[in-house]
Structure formats: structure tokens, C-alpha cells
Image (cartoon, rainbow, N blue to C red; front, side, top):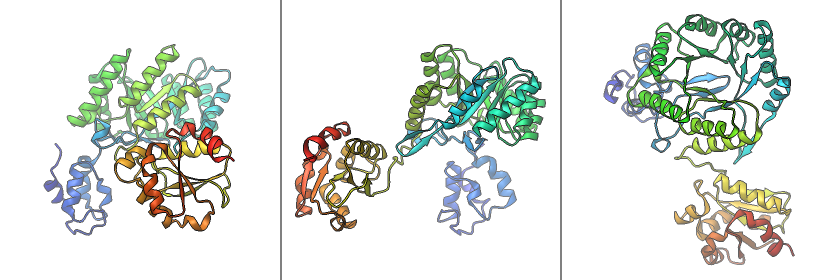
Length: 440
């Protein structure tokens, strides 16, 4: 049973030292009770408190390290309740009989998608045994690991996986397909080599029983591998497990999940993968390397796992596009990352050098910031004066977004001597606007 804030407070040192970031031990206790803090943040917690509160303060979904990436640690069922914590890992499968396996591994390693300032990459590689013997598979897995430097998801016979686990010792890889029949053996292999187990059973009851047993035996670096056959079944199973962990405190189902996707149809593969991203998937293994699929899934994942309380934003400051001089044009927009990268990209595509003024708008888009009073003529003018733009440029023309044309008069009043030009409403029209209006 979860402890109340008052019960937790009695176990804390009660020094009110504030080193945990809270003003009092009681305030920190309330954060622990609501899963908004970790006991490790208290530097003076006693061993007794750690033992009692450790389990009480840990997230309902246990965090597990896969390589350098964390999965799990979730505390809410819906993103808008607070936020989702760790993005699902998108992995790619390589079979040991693929003729171009090392070339695929190289593509996986080199794949990078930059979006709104974040570099998105493949997080793991599944290595599936199809034809080789145990020694050959282990050597193959080691080659893939050396090439990609990514954690592996080992998928094969017991003997095969055992040798491969030793070959990539310390990589924090995943041993998949662990059942009640081989759980004891595989848990010893995982312990010895620093890996994670993905446990599998016919249904949720079987998963529950197996994870509870392994945890009782002292091994708790676990992931659940659900045996589902349809999209509806996958959706329902993921939801039931997550709800049981969050709402009913079922620790035996409080783990991230692993899903191998291979329907034989590219469109169906994407549908199943999307379901995993939006409905609590932990590790999603795509059947092959497809850059177009990865770009779509990573974009969706980034959107779903953006903290709704902290919009993605760039630093408010004066940015340069190309190599502007004192006579280069000046553009203004908000510090919402997507807006910034779209606008700066389109200015760059137009072939001109320019200054881009980005005032503090708390990560809001243009219309949202304007409606909230964060992107008014007075606010923009104050920021321009603060950064001393007039000392850096000779031009006195400023381009504002077309959607907020109404602030042009106010901005001209606040910045005497400047001419305000109303630009396009959509960033996609910036290039044509530059050629029609700015290039003379």
C-alpha cells in the first residue's frame, strides 16, 4: 500500500535543510507520496528510510537501462496528466542470414534525423537467429554490436543466446523470449553479463506470475514481451498492463514492454508500430531498415513524448542566418522550436543572409503567443532594445509574421525610425516573399 505524505515525513530526517529542493521535509514527503520526487534527492535519508521508502517512491513502471537509454519510469496513464517520461526505443531487426547484415548495421549507425533541434536515432538492434549455430551467432552478434555500438535484442535458442550474451557482456542488451521453462537459467546469464530479460507467456496472468517469481528470486531488470496477434489485442493488452501498474499498483506488471513487428506488410507494420508509440510501447522492433518508416515513427514519437508543460523552445536571442552584414534584412518570430526551425530553414532556402530576432515567448507559436500577450509590439520592441540591435545593423526594416499584422502599428510606435513589413502567414511562403519584396 502506498504511504501518505505524513507517514513518509516521519521517516525523513526532519532537518528542513532544503538541499532536496523543497522548503521543508513535509513538502518533500508530499512530493514523494505523489511520485514527483525520488528519495535519492534527500542527502540525509537513513538506511531505514531507504528500505521503506525506496519501493514507495519508485515509479509505478520500473525504469530499466537498455544500453545508455532508459525505458519505463512512467507515472501517468495519459500524457496531459503530467508527462510521459522515457520515449519508446525504436529498434531494427537484422537476421543472422542476411547477406548484407553489416551494411544494414552501418546504415543503422549512421541514421540521424534532426528535427526541431533534436537528433533522433535508432536505439537498439535486434539480432535474430535464422540459420547459424551458437558460435556463429555469437560472433555475428558481436560484429553487429561493434559496428553499431548499440544494445542488442538477442533472439534465438538458449544455447545461442547464452554465448551471444557473453560475447556482448556489459552492453546492457536484452535477452528476449524468456519463459517459465528457461527463466532461472536466463536470469543467471543476465546477471553474469549485465543484461535485461524480456519475459514471455501465453497471457497477462502468465507474465504476472513470471515477473513476480523473478523479482522474488532477486532479478528485477525485466521487460514484458506480450504474445498478441491482432492490433486490437495489442492495444488492449498494453492498456490493461499499464492501467494495472498505475491505478492498481500491480508491481508484477509495472515494466516496460518489447514488441517485435513483422506482419509481412509495410502498411500494417506501420500501423502496429504507431499503436505501440501511442499506447505505452517500450521497445519497438521494426522488421527491417527503412529510413522513411523511421522518420515517420520518430516524428510521431517526438510529438507524443514532448512534455506538455514544457514546450520545446529555443533560446531567446538574435540569430544569424548565413553571414548577415549591417544591411541584411531582419525577421522576427517566436521561440517555439518548430516555428524557429521552419522559419530559419525557409529564410536559408531563399538564399539570403538575414538576422532573426527571437524574443522570449515561453515556447508558444505565433498566434498563441500573441493571444497570450507574449508577442506584442511592446514586447518585441523591448527585446530589440535589450539586445541593442540598432548598434549591430544599419537597416531599419523588420519583417513580422503575417498572422500578427495587427501589431505592426504598435511596433512602429515603440521603435521610432523603423519600418515594419508584414511578411507571409505561412513559413512555406517566405522564399517567394523574399524574392518579391526584399530582393531588389
